[in-house]
Image (cartoon, rainbow, N blue to C red; front, side):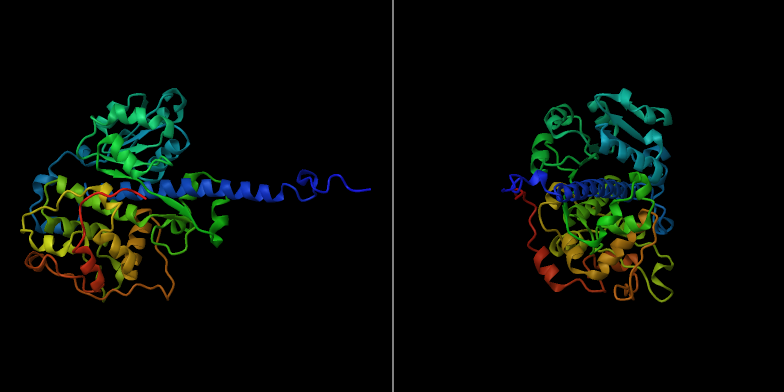
Length: 395
């Protein structure tokens, strides 16, 4: 007698094994995506905060007293979160517990603020007024549902301040659509993709996002410059974080020369990381703008105001540098790990070789487009000279 169940998959002994494995992998990826999103948002905020509270050596040589006389509260970064769901809560917890950010500098706007009692109890202001939040914050994190985005954008688009940055963690909404809805250019939107690696198990641990980000191995796995990653963030987002930091200096009225020196000290502090006979790298104008425009700058000129949406949709000098120079990638990886308070580790094969001398301020002023002595590829120069500032549609 024929087995009538032979073609019915639900009755087979191994039915469900494959689907269970798929469900586990999807759950793992969702956890990995949340951990990466929180880690990258934390890195961005720490980098931006560092540009608002300069403690670099150059401030002793340069007259920045007017800048330093600002009240301390004005130098603190105000973070606003729109959306009190899972990702909004995880972001707030990450900033509070790992970012060293005061509860007074975090506010959450959500339709149901009464569900955020854990944040009310520690002093985080939670309410439902998106316009009020936007008028207060320096960085706005969009963590709402995609279906709510259009209404939220219509509420806040004319309340956005020039210095404000919108950081979107809404899936499925491209950068061009956000720019259209907000009529705003200072928008950051990380894009993630998954790559099959041996790091699958690192997201399996049953721990909170905050606990995961206390693990050095997890920090290494989230590093944007780590060549072995399961969750990969787009390089253009990383470049845009640095351009956003330059905009912060420009907003403070600093010249491009002072900006470069202060920013170099933030990114590559002169400590024992590089050894006794080595010096950290120095950033130059042509790392961010094309050489022709850089050579036209006067010593007291500031950097131009960078359109962050364009930076993420076109190849820029900085993104090209990130893509082509392994030593620079290692330095950025070290910066990322240091910002998240984890010592950057590398193998002997991946060791950083940095053996150049930091030029003086006068040398920088005389030759603002002096190339990096550790070798920016000539192809980078020829490519960035043709860089355009016009927008293009996302593909």
